[in-house]
Length: 57
Image 1 (cartoon, rainbow, N blue to C red):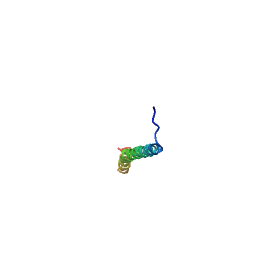
Image 2 (image 1 turned 120 degrees about the vertical axis):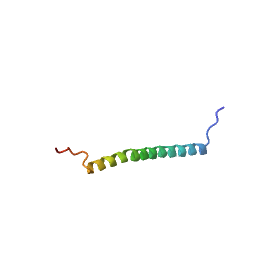
Image 3 (image 1 turned 90 degrees about the vertical axis):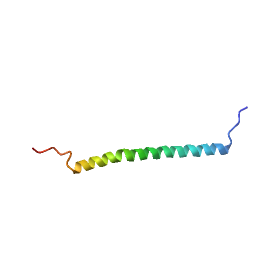
């Protein structure tokens, strides 16, 4: 015999799935910000110091 899941269990599992999705999205956002952010910062810093300008002889 199969037991049917009660409505309460289905609602709880749906809420858990939504929370997990939000956690994954926020984790991706944090990794993107802390991964790409410093790289952009370093490029701006080097550009301001003239690193990308061609040297004059």
